[in-house]
Length: 403
Image (cartoon, rainbow, N blue to C red; front, side, top):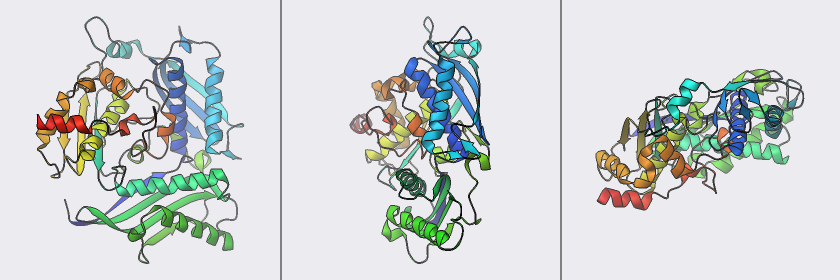
């Protein structure tokens, strides 16, 4: 690893058009899982000017049976879509929760996919698709996340909270942030550049209003970043294009799954390419990526490394992972091969099969809507939410390494 370098990560707010799509898709996942814990969902969302379109495949008892919607489910889906847009805060001329046109193109899951995933006879439940999934953790922040992404998320979370509470009534839902830090010896030592672009009320690109907006953003940054990272040399780019009144799906179309780097590690770690939102946990794009984060975080939390990347690989219809790869980037207290062996000794991980992952982490629950903005990782594990952020594997990993 280089001793001195600059690194940058970005985040986007809950009102970003792609994130609106992600939140709708995950609201649909939660709706179906609340009806049927064994539901299969692959829901894609398109958002554009006053329009939301759903497409994808489902299988869900009590919701979609014999190629028909049942028990009023079709209206319930539309209600969930509109309530999600309302919660985000869109009541604008170009995108309004009550006025948008809604189109539902969800249909039954392919029988050929289902037969590969479902357990039958002596065959265990298989992975919902082939692919590679990565997990990552490092000691740059208390939540064991890359600092550049961590602070990018926190800036926008704070701005959204102020918008919802009325503390910053001049803010509108769409926003983006970007944080550049200088690292020395692998540790962040200075913020060299902060970029924040936020949708705003009419007139907040001019005169005293613009000055108020800029002062507000700088204060948020000062509240979020450690004081020692900020200085007079920190460069701020706040709404660098000037006006940002037209935003969200009215300003740019949104699609599920286009912010996979924002969702994961901000570019500080590899990504297998699969998105998370809109997918039930039989899809290893989602569940195995959560498991890989869980393992990497516990390795770092156990003091076995200060930086850890884990890769898992699967084949569609096959239960056992094809490979497990651990890389501690030269920071491990034991060899990476010993960590791989230690993971294999922990029986309650269920061999990292799709069923084993879902059972251990409790993923067959309606817990996904909160994941769809401000990152799937580096969040607080509370109750059933974000179970892959728990560090309850620390003692077992230490014992398995020592065995």
